[in-house]
Image (tube, rainbow, N blue to C red; front, side, top):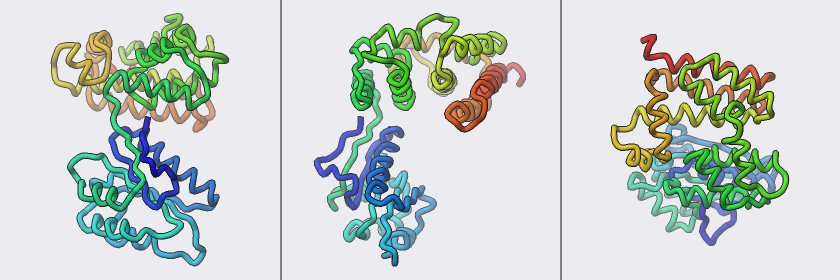
Length: 329
């Protein structure tokens, strides 16, 4: 999980979140915003990309207000700011305004290193958000998620969850939260197995496998059976997302042995072989369309739509059609 400096006040004048792990970067932002709104419910939050932060914009956003309102200014991808805007930010670091918290999100590489160094020199609170490329790091992340959620999980359960979900931290976090919400007592390997590797016909991963293979009727049958047997819709969208992303990752990777690709893509070797078989009918446009369908379904099952079942069926049909896009080329 994200590591913080000793200066651990979310309301510090400047917070520097460094790394490329999107989930941890987003959590660093949410922590600051939550602290600011706990201090002042009317806190104004401005979330900006480099193209939105032009020279002079920061001075305008941080100028004194007649109402002395609290404000959080978030700057994403700070390494991509223009040279003139970087000058503005460096000048601000020397004299930060009261009641304003600046959050800089920086990838941490050589690009924009001058700004990174300046923020550190100015005493910014720093949150490390590195990519978790090692299985041991992801395992530690899952253990930390359960601890944060106030629940006990056995080491075997944590390992089983990592094996089932893979390297996506958002999906790991979502799965841990879902298990905590649905299961009482200690979460063990058997519990994880019931959700992720239990009865094959009721598994969310079976739905995903049939969909990415272009087997529409079988995917819909598996979907309806899964829902009827109590599989949470969010687990199905998670499995669909993993299936489509795996297709996209492997299709854009260079050829190589499964073991080498497994290390490069963060998948177990057995999954490389399976995805290679599943990706035969896919095109880049098909992957893009499928990812959009998954995003829409995810929003639908999390309250953005009136009928989660319909949202899932629509996604499954779209993904299965995309799986056959090369043949229709």
